[in-house]
Length: 232
Image (spheres, rainbow, N blue to C red):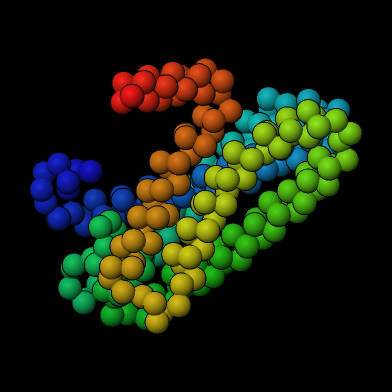
């Protein structure tokens, strides 16, 4: 945003490191919170009588602290490893922000293997958490389908669908950005993919979650209703 406002494409070394740190911090923290939310929905629907015991205020505070701590530790390790390397292939990052894969292309040392090792460990943790989310939703849908009333099923689905939409959007964009074949890699495609997983999920999150808020729904109906009437 600063670069756009001041019509510049330059960023300092410290600014680039800070950008990488905060980007990874919020990325990891958001994913951790999405995992916690899937557990919350699982307890609410599959074990509603135990909800107050399993997810009291202390448990919620502990899980939130764990999510932020995970994000902080992960981003600190990646940032420290990336910026401890010697960068000798120029200083132009071929992206609209400081992204680790693009920074690694500027390295001429073999220390990038440490970053690669961290990335593999994170990928394994990412996949393990994805399996946990998948397992939670399998149990949730099994429980919902056993609810006898249609109204009860609708209420349960409406509780889960916004979170499921955000998880799907987040995971699909991040997975495609990191697992696309090298043969498909090009500066223009990398730019589009980067926008997909850095811009689209944060923009869509408030829209998706707001759809369950009746006041916002009514305000949107009024707004678009008035707009249609003016055009007519």
